[in-house]
Length: 163
View (cartoon, one colour):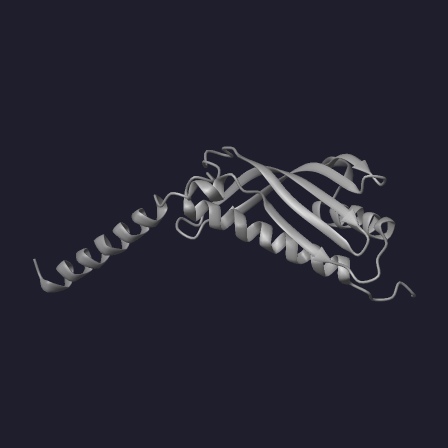
């Protein structure tokens, strides 16, 4: 066996071992029981204005507010629903799908976005994301971080409606 093949074999085994080890890294239990919560401070928005904007964000982000929202109440300042997300893992690069609960709470000049009850499922023969695998947890967290960032930007957008 020549030296080139030995080096390639060693490199391949090293890469395979590192990927396998990170794929099986377990998520710490304290993270598994924790919801993903994001609190956003809003400048000079009443609870009613924020509530309306929140519903509009859901409609634009999920293409249909009716398919997501299962409960809404302006008096309590809450919107609840269920949605489906997907994310790529950092190890295997498969797009994995998951279902989750979405809650948005509103107060004067403040809103809280909460993602909880994450459930994975298989889709087209590809296993869904499992919160117990740290790589999958990071993919889900990244997905929710991006959504929260988008929500925050949407809620703070003060461009004029005059056209």
